[in-house]
Image 1 (cartoon, rainbow, N blue to C red):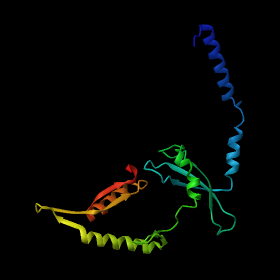
Image 2: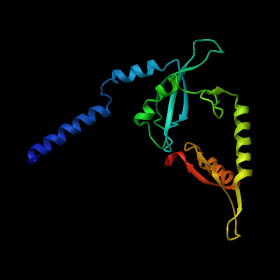
Image 3: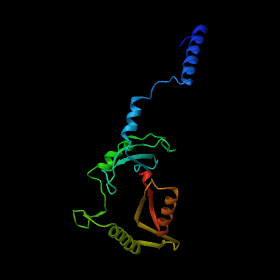
Image 4: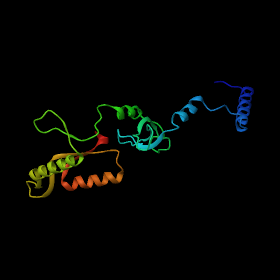
Length: 196
């Protein structure tokens, strides 16, 4: 854009006048959409959380509303990025923006299931049953396949028939503890959800 000296001074004068009026309080009214947002979320409960999809760890604001009463079940009706979160500063990727569909999906599991060997049906089990089963199967496999020494007679203490996939939304401390537990069992096949 070509601008001569006279046009430059006109442009600066208009900018100075507009900023002076704004500083004196003569600004436009808040946008209509902003007032609707506050109205929509008035009677809701705000909960901060972390997006479960990847290892970035974006912050979420989840808004829920109950149907009245003390024991009413809260239902999430709106999810948005947390503007105060240092990772995403209020923005969300397409998967994070669609979390409300993830929560309301009829295919979402709310409890553990197991499919017995040779069966084609999944059956619901309790959390205690699921954890006991995992521990028992891991112990059986480790006892059967643990390698204490290699062919050269060196101590290796490794377990090669089982792998472990860790969650990426955990804190650094939880990741450190997970790594120590998995490596102490001798598992070498260890990776993180963030790299899968």
